[in-house]
Length: 332
Image 1 (tube, rainbow, N blue to C red):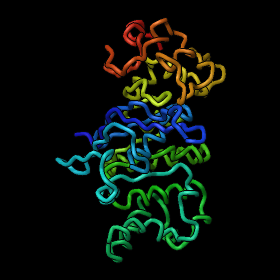
Image 2 (cartoon, rainbow, N blue to C red; image 1 turned 90 degrees about the vertical axis):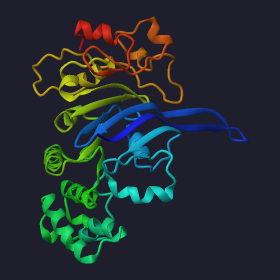
Image 3 (tube, helix red, strand yellow; image 1 turned 60 degrees about the vertical axis):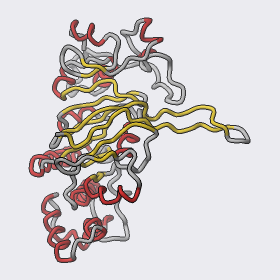
Image 4 (cartoon, rainbow, N blue to C red; image 1 turned 135 degrees about the vertical axis):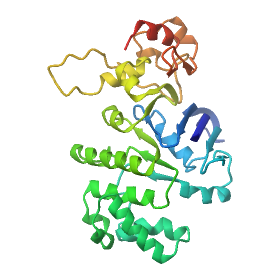
């Protein structure tokens, strides 16, 4: 059973101008996104900055109200609610089941609160007795490999990686069914990134976490995800199992993203070519496929007709008019 099913999710921002502030256009930050996350699965949502991946995560958390679409969430077996249309009052009891790990581990922690209070605040808000809060605090500190003495210290006393461990402990305090990790290692040093990724992998195995892992670094995503969804200008262009996607991408944009990942061996020849040109403007996307001005495989159909996300012969989902042709030719 899936813990989350997102169907045709849209988030548009009006562009207003003139004295009367009339709407003259729209920024299509998210424009028809669909995917699902199974229980115990990690789905990575990747793409360049500005593609809409963070907006998707905020809509799922209902920090933003979607313009259209459905977000069906199953907090328990046999239960399902549509978060997209749920009133705020009914949304509050569900928030304990969906928690977030933030990108900046320092900005997300209150500098005036001690670590013990930061981690147990969700428990206090949800009416957990003081004795249980203390017991749960010690469990969480051990879970994220932090010393018990950390509970009586302030966030500024810790390194970036330690602060992110505190943020992870807070996110896990209420036993959530779904964790949304919004670029949780992008603000950390490379050596610390590996430690946090290993911690998340260990927690996923021990707790059976379901996770939406938002990132732009494909070298990180490879180690933490079961499947990868690639976004470009508000739309998903490819969804595939992680190993299959890295081995043979089937959308030209996915191929370009992988080409941009630096090779560990500088003497090794790069067989893929990075995309040229600028990312399309979500307020004024090009007609047809939004990627066609940068795509080496574009044909006339790509310039006039927008492709839909569809299954290919290899079992993955790709939004490309030439997907089946490129799949059969083994391009990638």
